[in-house]
Image (cartoon, rainbow, N blue to C red; front, side, top):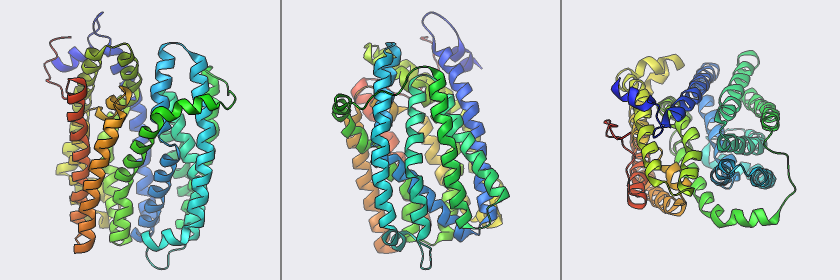
Length: 441
């Protein structure tokens, strides 16, 4: 109680209580969204047999990765640029960054769509078992622009201090719409892909309408000057998003290439459940990131460190009970998906530990990107990817079990977060792990 009281204490020197309240509001929406996603996974697992559920999860990982890559990492860049512009009340700059980003993303995502569409046969031969209908890859490719645009909306609402709107669109409305379609109409994997695409298309108008209602901006004309400015930091942010997607989505795609669709379904479900542990991290990051950018632009590194420590303490307090439950009662959670999913108990325990380390190290990735050290973060992620790829390559040659693959994924998560943690210490002079005393506030 003492820690919570100190976190919420209001004073001239401590305005973190406002951020705590914003984080709690964001977290409630995130929890509701996570619950919707969790229920959706249960519905998919109940409707489709494990093989088809595994294939559907592979398709989702594929479109998520390619949609994020299609953003070119501009989501992090506009979060930094628009966060600064909002802090300075420079709405013209905010308008220009948003509009030109949308133009670029639409163009790039259409090119990625065409690449996946015409390489469907090759992709199917790598990631799916014989007999898979490659038409589903051609179909799911149509959703890449929608995934990319929704991702940009998330970053834009976050940058202007309205992260809840982005969360409602992506994490609440879309899962609920898709889940409704699944309960009413879905009978096989073909129907699941059709209605997933329809649900993504239906949420796009919500993004544009809410953005318009905020009154921050109208669309501006395409500007080569803004695109040139994007190039300065854009390359680093692009590699960050690519490597990040490879690390986050590769577990499913690599599992698809090495093991059967049934095991892919088990690993995918375990990953998605363990991801609930980090919902607090996501909620706090969405609120804290613009503050990190603005405070650093003013040269107030001490306050950046103060916010980082308090944010980590807050996240640990809220996420620990869920972690403990996953560690000691994994069968209870997994049984909701069907008795065959209890086989994934070990996977869930390992992934939950990885997500806890993700929370315990705090918002290290966001801190590095919002303070201008995205190149260092990029190099660290690249090194981590090389190590992770080496482990997976050895796994392929020695035909290892799914358990070794899961432990390799866990090692990648730990290495990424600890590497960023020590990089923050080296570059900015503070650590993000709290001392839980909080006596200096």
